[in-house]
Amino acid sequence: MPKYLITNLILSVSILFTLPVEAQTATNPNYPNSNICQTLNSYVIQYAKTLKGDPLAMTNPTAAKPGQVVGAMIGIYQAGYRCYFPFGKISLTSNQQPTEQTLFDIGSITKTFTGILITQAAQQYNFLLTDSIAQWLPPVGFQLQHSESNVTFQQLLTHTGGMPDQPPAISIDPPKSIKNYSEKDFVSYVNAINPPNLPMPYLYSDTAFALLGQIALNINGYSGDYFYQSFADLVNKNIASPLNMINTTAIEDAPPTSIASPYQNCVIKQVGCNGKTGIINKFYWPLGTPMDGAIAIVSNVADLTNYMQAFLNEFPNIPPTLQKAIYATRYVPRPYIAIPNSNRVQGLVWEFQPKNKLWMKNGRAGGFQSYIGMSPKKRLGVV
Image 1 (cartoon, one colour):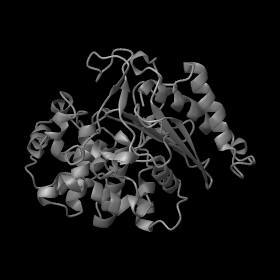
Image 2: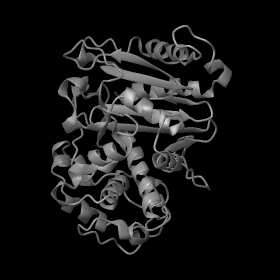
Image 3: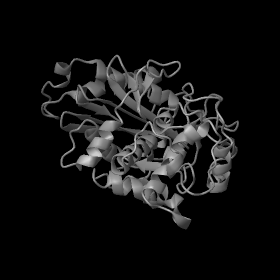
Image 4: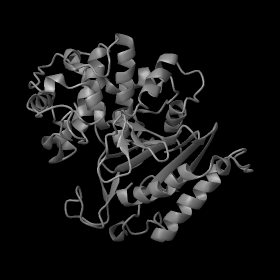
């Protein structure tokens, strides 16, 4: 989904987190004891249509307006109740409407899974997030520069470890450059990073979470020829399976008919459009590369609603070690790490909005946009 519409939806959905609790729990005949779905209709669907005409009436992709998308799916969890709202269709060649089971690349929401893998490992192997990562690096040739050798798990998890966003080599011609980006390329790139001191000021970093994903695999005993192909397996075993997230997987394992097609709205000049205009086909982010810990997972709204429920400490029969690991990712360091040009600060993986006590994360991969936001106080989550 293009960032223009996702921004409008997020602005609208954010209103839900500012409403009094009483306004969110009035009786609704369609959703007993919760009117949150009615509120969504009021603040999201109508808002989007009023602002854009009808952002999902896609009749001529080459003449698309800013904000128009092919399809989108929204889910809400609130105090034990959940509801789903579909927009548009799953592709330009199909009239099939998306459902809560439709798969999408979730982009950087993958980072939250990587964060949980790290907090789980910290419990199991008795290390602190303020410890250096050095002894946990996979044995594939990492030789960090002097300053970077002292980088901690917490610094990487909060984007203050001095690592750049993405290695330049993978953004030249995606997805080909991503698939061809090797372990040797990544190790050489990380070995050359040498920040003057730590912690560094906030700098959003896919590289940091790619490295954390590899560390999580190494800690959990993955090695050999299929090291990079194992990230989805580790996520499934440690997180998705216990939370009954049965469709959270890698793109290679997703049934072709169940996943939405990736598109980008190129009405105005932006990165990735290559001079084209209108709605253009994009790509699925591949699994099995050194970047998996940052961006590689696909999921659907039903599974991510389970994920939100677990974050809110309301998922039934969750293993205590997993619940503790999820709860640990709520941590917000003090003093606050400000995220530039926003009203948010950086927590442990999640971004945090102090005013509304809201944890959130958005994502982008290929032709997809994603968002997840949760308020434990209001027992509310939106994806």
